[in-house]
Image (cartoon, rainbow, N blue to C red):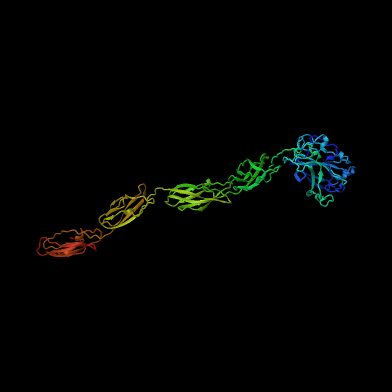
Length: 615
C-alpha cells in the first residue's frame, strides 16, 4: 500500500518554513546546479522506519533535472530553484517555478481544481492549524504517481524535501506500530542509482556511494500527538480496483484445420493495472466455426467445414471482480483447395439396348466446395459391355449381346488440381426375353426307306440365351414324302415310293413366348436301283406257222422305276417249238410240226444291275 500525505482538495501552498520537514542530506543530492549541464535523474523510495529496521515501501518516483534549468534560476538571483512533480490523468508531469528564486518562501506549486486528478503538496501540514489529511481528503485522489515538492540547495547546503502524494491504486491497509517507542519513526528518501543517466556527467554521482539516506523528520505526521508515527496516524486509503485492459488479437489457420492456441493465448497482450491475475471469459462465439475458450486464455477454434475467410469471437478479461473492455479475436481462415466429392451413380437399360447418358451425366451429383469446374476421369471400365466416358460426365454404355444383370465402372472427378474419391457407376441391364435361335438341320435316308429321328431331333442344335425350354413347331411340310414332327423335335419322314433326291420341311423353335427364326430341315433321299418289272405277255400263231415279234417285243409292257434301259433275258425255253429271244425283247417262235395247243417261255427284264421278276 502506498500511503502518502496529501493536502485537502483546493488547498493552495503558501510560503511556510520547512522547520518540521528539514534535515541535513549526507551527499545524496549535494551537487552544484551550475555543473548540471546534462540530465540528472534521481529515483527514490520513501519508507517508514520504526526504529528497528526498514518497513513497507510507501512510494517511489523520479525527477529529471533538465540541462540549464539550474542556471536559469540561479541567474535570477535565487539559490533555491523549486519544482513540483505531479500527475495528470496517470501521466507524469512537472511544473518548474523559478519565480523570485531568492528564497523558499516564493516557491509556488500548482493549485488543482476540485475533482481534478492531481493534488498540490502542502509545504507545512501543521501550518493550517492541525494535522494534515492523510490520503482521502477531497476529490480526485486516485492517482498512480506520487507528487512531491523539493527544494534543492545549489550551494551544497542542506537538502529540504517535502513528500506528499495520493494513494496508489494498488493500496493495501498500512498499520505500523513502532517497536521501540524511544526511537520515533521517520521517513527516509533514498535515491535510486539505477536510474542515474549520462554516466560521464559530473553531476551523475552514485547516490548509494555517498553513504547515507536523506532523513526527514515525521513531526507533521504525528496526528494523534503521541510523539510516534504509528497505525493511528496512517489512515486506510482503501483499495481502488481498476478493470483489466483487453487488447484485440489476430490468428490464422488453414481451411478445415483446427487452431489450437496455448496459454496465455488471448490474455498474452492483456493487462491489469493492479497486477491482479486475469482470466478469459467468452462473450460471443464465432459465426462460422466453434470455439472452446479456457480461462487461462488458451483456446481451440474449429472452422466450419470448407469455410475460408474472416471469422471472430469476443471475450473479456476478468480480474476476479471486474471485466475488461470487450476484445475481438480475429481469425483468418486461409482457403485450401478442397478435393471434389464424387457420389455413386446408378443407371438401367434393357438387354441388348445401348445406354446413352447426356452431360453432366455422372458429374450431376458430384460437388466441389470451392466451386471449381469438374471433369470425369475413368478408373476401371465395365466387365460386361463397352464404355465411352467423356470429360463432361456424359457416356455411352453398350452391354454385351444378350447380357443381363449388374455391371459397373468406376471414375473420379477432378477440379483441375485434385482428384475426388473413386465413385462407382452401377448399371442394371434388365433381362429381355430373347427369341430362340433355330439352326438348319440335314438328314439322309435311302429311297423307299422311312426316316425316324428321336428327340431332341431338330431342336438339338437350337438355343435360347435365356435358357428357356424350346418346342418345335412345323412351318411347311416336305414335298416328296410324309412327315410327323413332334414338339420335342423328334420326327418321322417317309419318302414317296421310288423317290430319291432332296426333300425338306421347315419349322420354328418356340420358348413359350417367342418363335425363333424359321429353320429348314433338309432330307437327302439317296437313290436305290429298282429292279425292272416284267409283265407277262401272250401271243398266238397258227399250226406250223412261225411267230415273229419285233422289239420291244416282250419288254413293251415292262418297266423300270429308275428309268434305266432294260433288256430281255430268257429264263426257260418253249416246250413245243423253237425260240429265238433277242435282248431288245423281239423274238421268233416256230411251233413243232403239226403241233397245236399252248406253249410258253419265261424271261426277265434286266436294267443292267438287277433282274426283274420272271415273266
